[in-house]
Amino acid sequence: MEIKKYKYSKRKRQDQRQLYFTLIGILCVMGVTGLLNMNYSGKENIKETANEAKTEETIDVKVKEEQVETSKERLERVRREAKAKKYPNGVIRLLDKNANTVDFVEQYDEKKDLPPAKTIGDDLVKGQIPHLLQWDQRWGYAPYGTSNVAVSGCGPTCLSMVAAGLTGDASLTPARLAAYGTKKGYVDKENNTYWKFMSEGLAKWKIDCYESDMEKKRIITELKAGNPIILSVGPGDFTKMGHFIVLTGCVDGKIKLNDPFSQENTEKLWKFERIAKQTKAAWVYSRKK
Image (tube, rainbow, N blue to C red):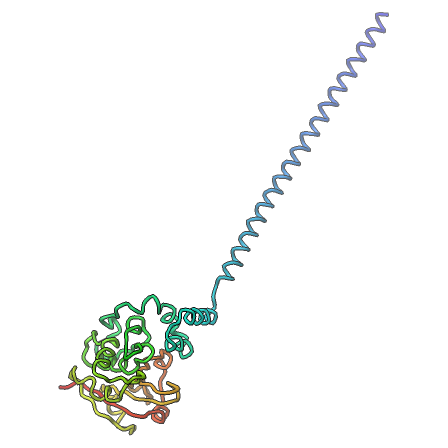
C-alpha cells in the first residue's frame, strides 16, 4: 500500500512538472509572437506615417505648382483687374504694346498719385546719353497733358535723355520735361507732342538744336561728334502710329539708338537705311559752347 502510494505520488509530481513546463512553453511562444506582432505593427505604423508625410508633401507641391502664374496668365489677370478698376484705356493698352509694362499697369492704382523721382540717378553716366523708359515707375505716372508720361510721353522722355546726357544734370527727368512741355503748350488736346517742343524745348538748358535731313553722311558725322539726334518716326519697327526715338552713336557701321518705349529695340544695332525710311523729321543737339 505504501509502495503504491509512493509510486502514485511520484507519477503525480512528474505530471505536474510536465504541465508546468508545458505552460511555460506556451507562455514563451505567446510572448515571442506578441513581440513579433508589436514589431510588425510598429513598422507598419512607421510606413503609414512616412506614406502620409509623402502624400502631404505631394499635395503641397501640387498646390504650389497650381499657384505659379505664367507670364501670359499674369498679363491677362492684370488686364482683367485694370478693366474692372476702370483704369484709363491708354494705361490698359500698354499691355498690348509691350508686355514688360505689366508691373507699371499692375501698380497703377497704388502709385499714380505719388510724386515722381527728382533724379534719374545711376542711369546717368558722364559722356553718355542715358536710356530712359517712359513707363519707368519712377516717372511714368507723372502727368503729361491730360495723359501721363508712360502713355504719351515719348517726346519729353527723349528730350530728357538728350538734356541729361549733354548737361550732366540728373534732375532733368522725363517727369520734369513733361511738366515743362505741358506748361509751355507743347502738347495738344489728344496728348500728341508738337514738333516745336523738339526744336526749341531745350534752349532753356543751353542746348542748341537744328532740324536736319536724313542724309547718311551728315547723320553719321554728327553722331561721331557726340551729338545725339531725335527722330520722329511713323509706322514701322517702332510704332503703329507715331513715336520719338534718339540716335546715340555708330557701331560697326550701324546705328545705336534709344527707344523710350522698348528695351529690346535699344539693345539692337540698326541699319541706317531701315531707320531712314521710317523717319519723318530729325533734330540734332549739341551743348552750347
